[in-house]
Image (cartoon, rainbow, N blue to C red; front, side, top):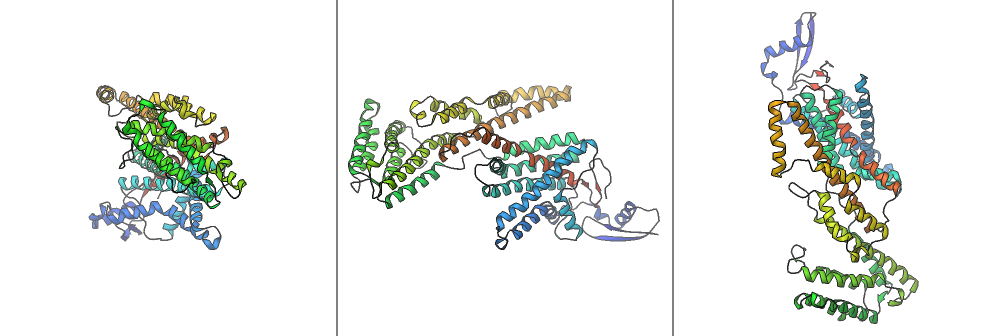
Length: 563
């Protein structure tokens, strides 16, 4: 007589004796369900869902914990870098194995076990508590999405921690830094790839090529959707703080602007204001004159660099709302004229030399003035681009970001006064940004076909879609592909343009020249590679989930029983 032990979804197990010698596990299961019909229902309890989530998170959590332990202070590395290294090692192993599986599957070569899959199997074989296998389609989609999101996002976060430890300026550091900049985007991309691929498997799709394309669409689309609008990592405020440090060091060294030079500056600013003539009313002139009067009535005869910076800041606030910081309609003209006076102040500072300051150590004074002047210049240029980026609105119903960027750059690249602030190389880059690269413009053109909330476009898709649905479904599929492809092109054009603008602003603020061909190639490789982890890990997470029924019986995507 045969004997079987049957494990049910609720965790209980039964031993069935007395079955014929040729009986199978299915026969034993049927016998148990005859006695316990309530056990046929899948477990959707909170405890089950938490167990599924724990199972999905387990491998990368274990890798992080092991890395932190190995790199703790007594190990000489540090817990945070150690945890990052552990997650990165597992992520690299999973991605490498996943790439092999994707290449091998179409040729019928068996899949290799992912390192994360091996960790999970080892834990469960050892009887580790807290994990539960997903037993419903919804749980399997959730598990695949969460597992891929953890792997992709965790790997990116690990790179973000480890990249700064490499030598600055190297191609390796540039590539890893780019890969690590979008942890949130890669997590969303992983969730999209894993969830969509598993949903396709649940729907009966078994073709590995089609499943990969589903993963590709989910991974790229999720990464684009989950990414924040690119912004410089360095801001004008950061640069001004650096400049402030030089100002304070200069004061400690006794470096201050001479009284006669400060008086001459006040005269120059007032002359600049008077030259505007009828272009400014008395009401708009008054706040500018008050700032110049503050310069004349300074507390000391000489003038500090920080006082000069406050003077510039006060000019920049003229015509702006105290609540929002935005230029008001009634203050627009005053703000424009204050900007001209501010430019005169900037010119003075950029041309300041050691004969115009007092100092105990002339050589030290020259060094401090040069450093402060350079920081001042960088902030001045970078803030022009920061303002452009801050005004670009992204969202439904808004102008495409790339078009908005080009429109806002147009008055800058045609303004000789503003363009003189930039170097020749920077001017070339700004003009390229305003006109758009060939790739950006092609993607932008394709993106104009994307459906939006515009009524004309909605009707443009709805009418042929209705007709196609009633006549030829293949046309409906093609129409959907056109719409999806156009939307992706639009998103990529926006992301490329904003990222380029962000890079330019960051380089200007940091005082770096535009990147060379090698650096640009490194960034391009890093940004392109950022789509790989979500797609690969999403595809593999779905294949890891397989099709496990409520009784622990597991099948591959072709429906073959595994265990």
